[in-house]
Length: 414
Image (cartoon, rainbow, N blue to C red):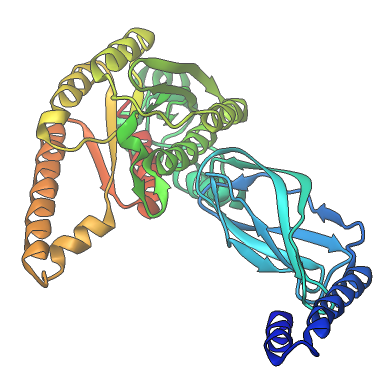
């Protein structure tokens, strides 16, 4: 506007040319007044500390800026493991910023960018405010905290009122008088002769079995399903099963591997073992190397001389890439009871069942169908080798795996 008035004054003639500078003088005065009225005061940013956030869940950051401005907005640079809005309204000085945790780790926010206009809207202030916020994203143990798993295990294995399994298993529990309806095989004939009455043995499910959770942490487990890497879904199910095994009286260990063995925790009993497993799985990095199944399974076989239940979380692309994995898992199955867990991608299943709209869609459907067919072939081959296979979507893995463990426990298969 000032430029337009100056041009008009110059074009109008010599008499008006001295007035050509007045619009700029007026603009300068307005700018000076705007700065005096709007000069930013010292602002303080405070943020509420956050406790541990479970991976895959949503939370929020409570942030306060004092003093606020009527049109103030904020902007954060989100670290790789967190997803949230790019900018947000801070006109009231306080905001709750929702976010979703998508990767394990400790994620740091260093700066907050603020934006607001001056009183006369001639200027826009964009300061960078420093603040320190760390968000620790840890494996998801929501089902453990809820008590759901404890209730399931205790009701299935021990009954609601009595903390033992009677009538099944191999571990001697006690003697009692034989009554009609009891299994005749339970009669202890030597003690019956000594007592001159029929006496039966009660047995209960044997405890202290070894349960080893083997996590493949190679690059294929970095593939995302339901907005989370497969390895995080695997860790969630692994910790849920570890808690069930601890409640069931068994000893739980952990084995993680990729191009080479990375971590081995020998089986330990109770909640101490679970706490160690939770801590060490939180520290597992996201690897970008190919898994060496031969080295991994050979090392695990050497470290577990006692027959154990080994739960293997792994993945594969096709029958060729799965060949070495199947071969080495089958060697492990000669000594141990193996449960193989694979994560099914619901998007691929839906793509095969959806009618294609064009030729590109036809090609994608055919290639996806071929991948799923090869996947089924590998899982069927594992099943034929006597390996228990669990192939389910991420939300179903924990439930099916715990149910499989309880069935194995009740049938004394270990």
